[in-house]
Length: 66
Image 1: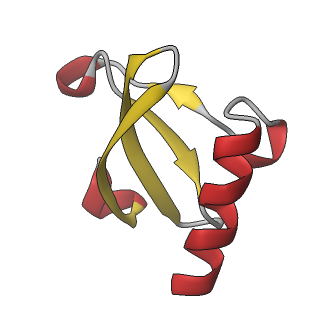
Image 2 (image 1 turned 180 degrees about the vertical axis):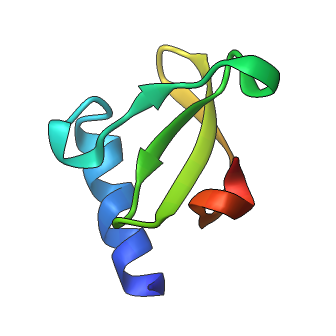
Image 3 (image 1 turned 120 degrees about the horizontal axis):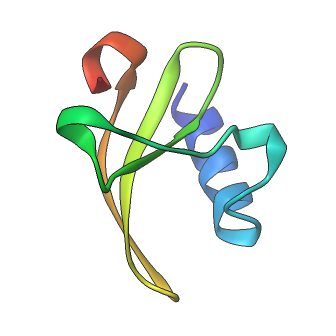
């Protein structure tokens, strides 16, 4: 999983809105945050700081992150 995470993070840094990553805005208690998929179950929770920076908040399974 570690290797897959680094691969997906590299893809995210190249193209954050790639359909392959399924990047999406979150709502509810996580409003203002975003997530992208590492695989079918693992997600990376993050926040856009500005046009050049993101803050990675959490990495884990769907249930752990949400």
